[in-house]
Structure formats: structure tokens, C-alpha cells
Image (cartoon, rainbow, N blue to C red; front, side, top):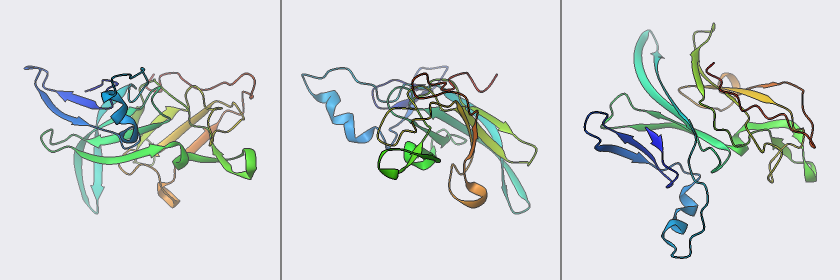
Length: 196
């Protein structure tokens, strides 16, 4: 799988080179029309790294294996997505996360709650933790102090989200680990590869 920065994430058959499917993350869809404009000036859409992992999905007493692909939008937007590619002929979207889904306790202009999520290129890690759940782990990335929802803290942040459900509330809420290191004039955005 590859994010080709044409607004799509493409999956290819490794032995034949044939395209198996293409996926357009919802966040880039509103701007894709610009690609057909004869006076188009380059912009980023979806160009982040993708991690593929086999995880365990539990439903009651039954456990099944699923192959999931998790990728970031890179410089295109602050965000990431997860696809279930267990049946490569019928992939499904598990979840998508945008900047507003990871609002933090920081306050920005106008008293709004802000996000620490920026543009990250590093490959998200997909790991089974001691609680038995599979989690996606990633740093907040570059430019986390820019944009209308951005926290101005400049702190380096690590996020954990449920690999199969994304983020929500209660036990499905994202976990945010704030390093408390960094500041607005010298941001310490985490852009290291979380899989190492």
C-alpha cells in the first residue's frame, strides 16, 4: 500500500503490480477537484506512512484475526485512518481521525479547546498492550502549534487510540501522553517513528 499524494491510498498486488483498490480519506475529498484544474499548484493530500499489522478482534468469547492498515495523511492534513484489509477484495474503513477528534485540555484563542495533533510522517505503531487491546501509537508530528484548532503549547505528545475502533468516549477514548516539554516559539513535536 502506498499514499500517492493524488488524494488516494493505493493497494497493489505485489506479484502482478495490478491495483487492488484505492481509498480516499474523507478529509482530502473536498479538495480533490483541484487536481483537475489546469492551473493547479501543488498541494499535499495524503502522503504519510502506512503500517500493516495482524491484530486480534474479540467479540464475546470469539477471537478472530484481522489485518489492518493504519496511515497518516502526512503533510496533507493532521489526521490518520485505519482500514480492514483482511479480505483484500473487500476492504472496509475502520475509522478516520481528524484534528478535532483529539482535542486536548489546552485552550487557544477564544477559549476553545485545542488539539496537539500536527502533520506526522512517521509510521504509526500497532501494538498489543498489557490490557489485551491493540493500540495505534503515534507522535503528534510537525506543525502541531499551527491552525485554528492548534494548541499553542508546542509540547511533544504521544497518542494511543484503539486499533479497531479509533477514538470515542469512555474506554474508547484516545490516551494522550504529554511530555510537558516544548513551547510555542520552539515546538517539540514528536516525529520519531513510534514503531522503534
